[in-house]
Image 1: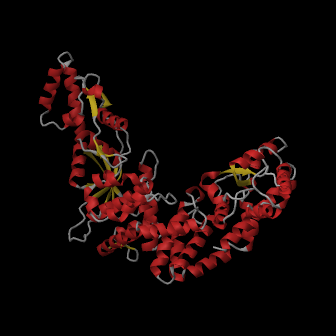
Image 2: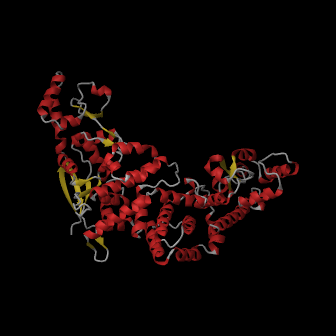
Image 3: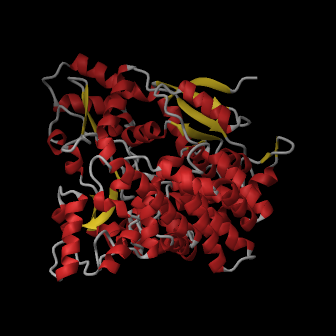
Length: 596
């Protein structure tokens, strides 16, 4: 059985389909990312008769909507959104939406003498040899009259050559474009495989792209839900565009959904700025107990997993459930309470979070546990904190992410979070993990290592002070008041037989320190700069930091998981120092985790 059909259609027919809604373009109300030069190049290719690539559509099943009508879109455009938008903008004169959600025109000029296309500029608009806006010519009621008018304005040009060029320009609307229509009963895996094989760039669509297309095809509700997702993600990053969205999309502003995300215009937190992929994943996990977005799309398509057949009632119910889930996800209280939960675990800055996937599951878990109503808010937050940190430390959502999401949420739903977390801790976070596996994993030079980032989060959570600091905390330094300092200075190591940056940049050689302390230590060996600290403890004259007694120094070293052997560490004993510090850092993280 054929999985798709292939046909050629003229540009004019395709644009008519778009205008009448026969083809749904989820991207039409999203910011247009092409610049005008790409639009110009597309028109030139159509003019020259060059191929512009296939458009790929996915047949959408017609289902009932809340108001008794039917979903009107017959095909969903899953590849070619930017090309269609560009053609609509340049040939029809339709406005596009820019990054601030303001509508604007993209005008492409054409010179019939040189047969060149160009982005319209004030200079070209005054030059009679250029047609300022090809949409006005292509859309003119009478091409003959438009051509005659051009000839009168440019009497010296070669009329025959110009007439041929203008005829070719007018014929752009008859240029043939290939359309591949994928059958409605294909699963996403098959659709993705076909897409990869067809797409000359080899760029695969994600399951979330299909989900956004499927959502947008579901009438007015689907259109608004797609916008709810897109606008929420955009406002989370750029709150200032709220007024632009309200002004430029009045229908959405009146829909009631806009008020649900209005709080973002005054929100300054950047700890979690989800993408539309993140929101779709969270919704699938929380509401449908499905970690695989492909399965969510199947449900939205009305797929009955038991009979493997289409059931319209399943599709209708799925969209109602998706709406409820999304409204809960974008709710101000839910979102802010979750981010506060993550912050309370010490992850106080975005740079500390090495896995967005772990963050996604943690938010879905938070919403799931709250909806279960078997735990109070404090217990919910405790479990979410521990699960998130466990996920980061074990790389739980690094490979086969969706499979892991799927398995975890189903186990938690069936057995409860307490049982599942206990099983994970006994099987994954055993003594051997803390005492062997974690120290070994710290044999890295990457400051983006999840283990070093978690160590910093642990310090922030426990209120640790920076290295040799009396007042400035690690939290302050994470937020911008400190440096990553080498406990055994790298220049000292490099000039004493350890020239490899992979060796002197080990994370076990890192500590957060105030900039003045970092500068004061400079290239001195530990025995030298710690002797200066000992001297100031003896005579009270500050030489390095503000440590003023031995107990304070010991407390500071412990808070930074620094072994006593640092005092005597040289280039020769540096490997032994690293080994000792890795074990102390692992033990520090363990105490932190078990105390969450």
